[in-house]
Image 1 (cartoon, rainbow, N blue to C red):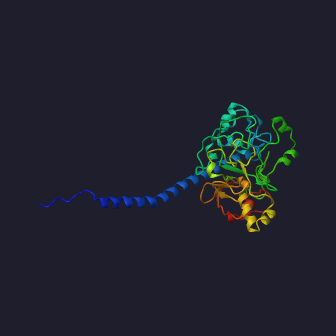
Image 2: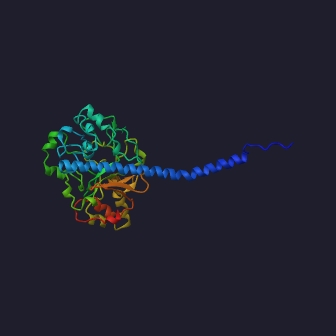
Length: 347
């Protein structure tokens, strides 16, 4: 009698099947990762869209975009309204217009309830490619000393408002010139203007920018976008670009810039290869990386996405901007009223 043929796999056949499955997984994995990143980018754009709508509703309600506040040491004071008397900045002031009015009204700016508010993550303030929306360590004493409260954790943001330029270079505005509410109210407009470092954008110290002030066109001007951060310190609270809370006044954690002087001067500064490299290290948009090449890279826009960063313009439209965007176009998009309209085909 002939022996019955075996129905089992031989070792060679099994190894072939395993190899084929491995090859298929290797081929499919990049496609799966690409699909996931595309979904995360869609969610990121939606977050910026909601932030843009919140800013627009604030402008329609009060006649101006959210104020920039008084500096990084200050948190929101619900009783002080939405104008230049409010020491906190744009992310605090749009809360009632993104269905988070209860969070806006929590605490008085100095109490334990305020600490809870400052440590509360706001999901739409985070890019899903960058990091999840959760409280992150608060390293008290690192660059900032919160004058009124001392939270154990921080609610952060992966986005920043458009502050225009920093004339003469130097750090972006952070610290407040006043230490009490009474001192802030008594500080003259001229004194605040002299303290303000950024200019030309939508947000700065005690800003109350109106839609009609954006004479270059709402569809041609940055409002809020993704900010560059150090990839290796996103979760530790050690990043110099990421020390303060979403609930704070004007600081480089909540505001970024497109240049360090006038357009003509900045263009002149990039005419040599060395100067161009130094300039772009400071202000050029870039993908997150571990470490920075210049101390002023804290001023730049950027993201964790591999193919560009997202910006919502003052008309509420959201655009993905290439990291290689023409510098002049990027600069003009950051200035609200210099009469130089950016070429819409370049962004």
